[in-house]
Image (cartoon, rainbow, N blue to C red):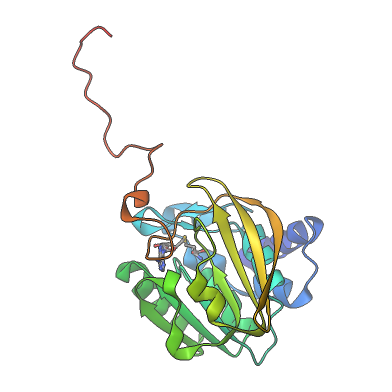
Length: 233
Ligand code: SAH
């Protein structure tokens, strides 16, 4: 066993201790090399249970959250699943190892192309990629047995509810700019049953049924510091 593999085993035990029970999800985390989805400077931290920076000011989600969201989807091997916010592609790989077909949408072309290259190199050929606004879903291939949004929205996008199959499940962080509640929405015919899973903190989804473009900038982290002009205030 190499040291990455040993680190993955430790991570799986940590996730188990945190309450993740689905053996298929744990097995996916045990086999998918998260370090290949993390930029070089952060690789040594790839199997710690925390988010890490990727390009375009985005993050690869925390493994516990990835496991929790995937578990909540309860995917079957024949399922079709839609992911909004490809980012590094790590969550995409987890989904692609559990479901038949994955449709993934990312706003930044640079992130999408890197994720595509990684996933293809790892042998995942059941993924379709789209660059654009995922808050309106991907109606062409609907309905989906599972929909997962890895960025936050102010309210559940009606388009995503519409694109759920009967009995399908949507997992999505809903709330404010910095803190949200992770929601599970299950479709039963024309009815939608909502349940809160936990509190969470995701980056925003920028789009027609998400946040406006100005939310892409984090008001807590100004890009440049105001000049110190020496004035007494
Ligand atoms: N699952 C990813 C998380 C990336 S963070 C991972 O673990 O690596 C959220 C991602 O959503 C970012 O890559 C961001 O660019 C993307 N995003 C933001 N708004 C979007 C939109 N409207 N449609 C698709 N992707 C969006």
